[in-house]
Image 1 (tube, helix red, strand yellow):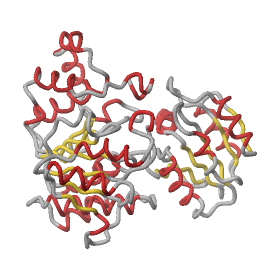
Image 2 (cartoon, one colour; image 1 turned 45 degrees about the horizontal axis):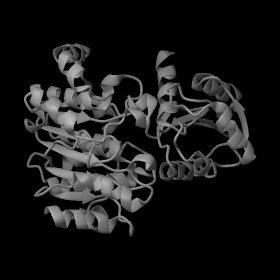
Image 3 (cartoon, helix red, strand yellow; image 1 turned 90 degrees about the vertical axis):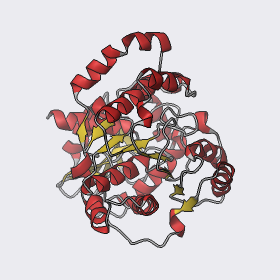
Image 4 (spheres, helix red, strand yellow; image 1 turned 135 degrees about the horizontal axis):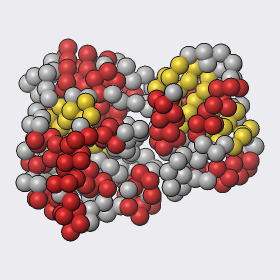
Length: 394
């Protein structure tokens, strides 16, 4: 399971997914879909589009990853998680096939989602890729539109060291005869997308070039402005007959309510103000820190942790020096040991304390904070996952 152990769990090949789908009667061909890739923002964009489609009265499947607290967050219809009974029955149904094919956790989950969406006869499924695009397990769908949010440095050990190489992987979801939209222009990545679109025969648009209304969303992170623009562009190109301007406005204002999205500039409480966000790579953390510094507070407390394999030195260099840090490793095998993290913080002369768990780190921050302070929890999706699990258990 990549979420827990990392790259060793990855299978960059569509063979297993195709075999699973064939065994299930090719459910991926039994529903219409929107396919979304990108470095940052693809989860938010997926949830936004799903919310708009729900407002339009469509029965909407939503497949995203990773989950934060409950595995079933990955597979939803109109905001409701897949029933536990379906997960159990599906696994029992294909147990012998699992033994024969030996799929990865992600491959099995994709097949489960597609089978569920087909059985439930969704009007539209919004499908988020895992890491890349070309050989991502989700790339067996033939969507109505392909959406690529942006390209940044993340998972470079698997996707490539340059933005162009990473874009090449993400561009794998661009398909013949299927319109595609890219959320953000970049001199290194634009030629990659344009070349792929030209080769396969896809009508490519860049969201930045389109004259679209300025919508607002209940996802309040400043970085969401770019995601909203990407959503507006995708919906404009999709041009679904049931979706009106009114649905777009309402859908973008009720994303959390309609889909249950968590962990994106999520405000947990006030006095002291507590915010968590799953942004974890250089681009994502840069946006988060910019917004943190625009907040009004007496003192900033940051509960922070990362997973191994990230360019942690680069992210720590971004962090504000005036904050008080509460360090812990997230509770996954990939979690960067807190001792290693502390050494890097010491090198940057940042003020920190270490803790055995995210829960303990947050509890200490809460105890030390005054009502006018701000506590931020992040650095890794899995730090936020541990934090939200703790909050929900209280």
